[in-house]
Amino acid sequence: MSKIEKRGGTLGVETRAADEKRTLVGYAAVFDSPTDISGWWTERIAPGAFAAAIGGDVRALVDHDMGRVIGRTKSGTLRLAEDSKGLAVEIDIPNTTDGNDLWELVERGDLSGMSFGFSVTKQSWDETVDPPLRTIEAVDLFEVSAVAWPAYDDTEIGKRALAEWRSANPATPAPEEITDPAAAPVTKANLTRARLKMDLELKVRSTR
Image (tube, rainbow, N blue to C red; front, side):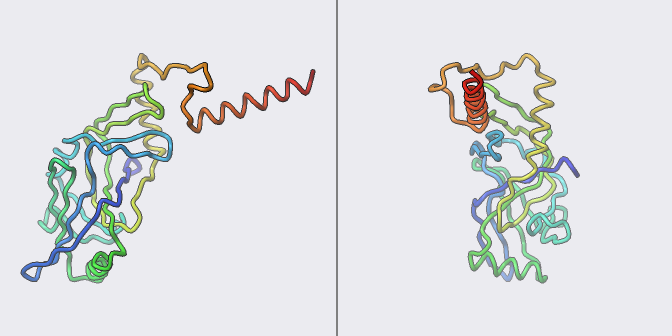
């Protein structure tokens, strides 16, 4: 379970009621939508990333809490599909405390996001750009969640994935070194290097 990452966004979730059945609908992921992951890399999800995963036994949860199940693909109360936009989700909400509370919160607009928990099975990295671009091409999907706060955590897993990619692809060219400070992109790493260089120059001057 340590390899599970969580992603999501304020992509919208809405309620639909018909024939005494209450259903939440929305998107847990959108294809080809670049997302900044804590400044470490940019991430996009390629169309088809969920194709093999949506046939598995996936749960619908509240806020990624494994103890708060509100639907399941195996029972037919959670339905997942890939379309041209992304991972479409339909959850038949149960008549439980969590289900009733969730329905009320979505109707009021207090809860408006969806997210998903996954493990990457196929990915590629482009290090010719800064920050690197990670393209997720295939995943194992464990759960989808209705969330109050979209999750963009577990950066350590992604950082390990980048390190593994570099180890397996030693010939991958690193971004070209920029010697002209005016031409350098403004990034955390460049700002840190600039400050260190400035501190060093000041120390050298003070010792002369």
